Image 1 (cartoon, rainbow, N blue to C red):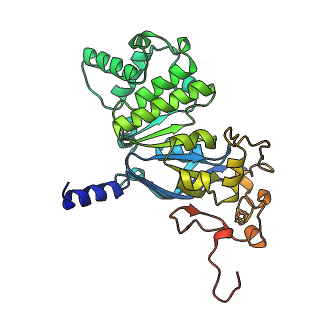
Image 2 (image 1 turned 180 degrees about the horizontal axis):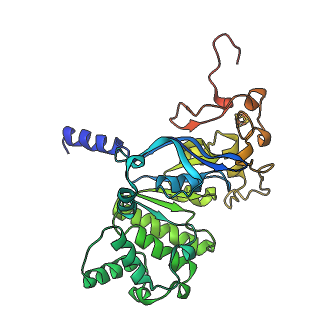
Image 3 (image 1 turned 135 degrees about the horizontal axis):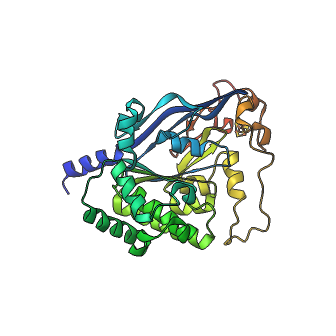
Amino acid sequence: MTTTDRSVQEQAQATPVLQVKNLRVYYETEAGQVKAVDDVSFELQPNERLALVGESGSGKTTLALAIMRLHKPPGHIMGGDILLDGRSLLDLTEEEMRMVRLAKVSLVAQAAMNALNPVMRIGEQVIDGLIDHGERRSKEEFRTLVTELLERVGLDPGVARMFPHELSGGMKQRVLIATATALSPRVIIADEPTTALDVVVQRQVMITLGRLQRETGAAVIIVGHEMGLMGQFADRIGVMYAGKLVELGTVEQVVNNPRHPYSKLLIDSVPDLEEKREKLTGIPGMPPALIQLPTGCGFHPRCPSAMPICSEITPPFQRMPDGSLVACHLYDEPKAGVEA
Ligand code: SF4
């Protein structure tokens, strides 16, 4: 490869496929404003796998749905931007966005049973989805495509003639993965794709998703709460708490050297069979109600390292010397003239 080729390739690799910039998704309710996603920014490179982890209610699913513009009212995007290949998804009309879904950015939904139509055969609904997003082929070509798609996720082509209730949870999830990857999208968003599956099937689903990601060259955002499973799949991990991204780094940085006290507690709550940790540490307290967030750092009422400043000032999302990002006052630069 020539130097020019290499620099072109490096430049292409450095161009993010997805940019989320200062995104804010709020819900207006009678009881007040709920900041479900609050000032979240990150970039995703082609081929990259990013896991978003956090407890229920941390905003990760709202963030995933907002990227697809599938968040439901009374949720609104109050600010920020979402760029796919440099083009703002927020500038698209509803019809343009409908065409972008599946073709450019697709969703593997959380509850496979709810995402599939119970009274339609699998093959028909896969074809229906493709037609709905602008794909035009003959009946025979569509049938061949469905066979290919099912085989690609390890399912027998006969599944096309079956109804969702005839499939196991793992098979349904594979159907969703087959549909989501059918048009080779640039970004696949998988929202807790292994919820309610047993551990063996969870692993098979993750392997299938990983293989298709490699084959299609798509970037993946996977949403989950199980740090161990996410760490095995992803390249980078983003930790969310109370609507904010509080830590973002490589799996090595976040899992082996977590900086944010919440990330540390999340990791300590995962069983480690190799180290045979005798006692698992739970996270003290409960996640805050998003409608009534604590002042300053949202984690301060539960944080074992909280300091006076934590309840007063929201910590900035700041870059660490190793390139990871963290929002915590423990890593504030010492002010000039103030002893550390
Ligand atoms: Fe804990 Fe303070 Fe850091 Fe928040 S800013 S995580 S309360 S040390």
